[in-house]
Length: 190
Ligand SMILES: [Zn+2]
Image 1 (cartoon, rainbow, N blue to C red):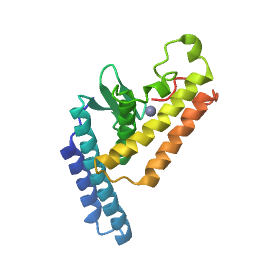
Image 2 (image 1 turned 120 degrees about the vertical axis):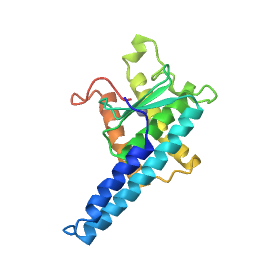
Image 3 (image 1 turned 90 degrees about the vertical axis):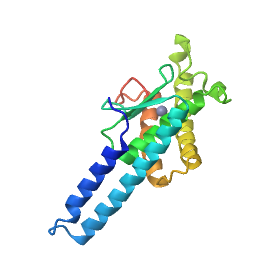
Image 4 (image 1 turned 45 degrees about the vertical axis):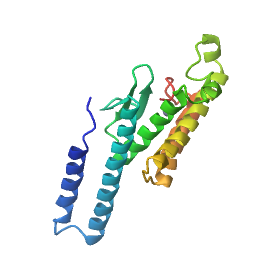
């Protein structure tokens, strides 16, 4: 497991770009693409830094791992895990989403009631029912919404189309899980 180190990530992004930029065999078009990629990566690193600082102000630790899932929020341990194998922009979006769960769980918020049959449901009889899975899907959608709002609040510019693309990819998996699609892993969303 690793802590966030913006310096290492920035150096890595610049080194990769510099290699392409000074290679005479690489076309100008490809160099422009790589320059845009570098720009996007630096923005994502700055975004990650801003969200991690926000988490720290709420005493939440953010750890980067190579765990299977894209990310997960653990309320009891006050920790968020982010899969560091993903593209930096995706890591930022997933972190924002996990912060969305954190905001939903905040006792100062009034939404816990809406999701009481979801992750907080203790009754095994209810947990077998669709009402439980539906509440979880609703919380997942809300967490994406809150994540985007948090980005706005922190002044982080995100590519809305990319954010919605990732959201829709994951929402599809939540729905498959909720409807017990046999092709979907049984353990549910994060
Ligand atoms: Zn989630």
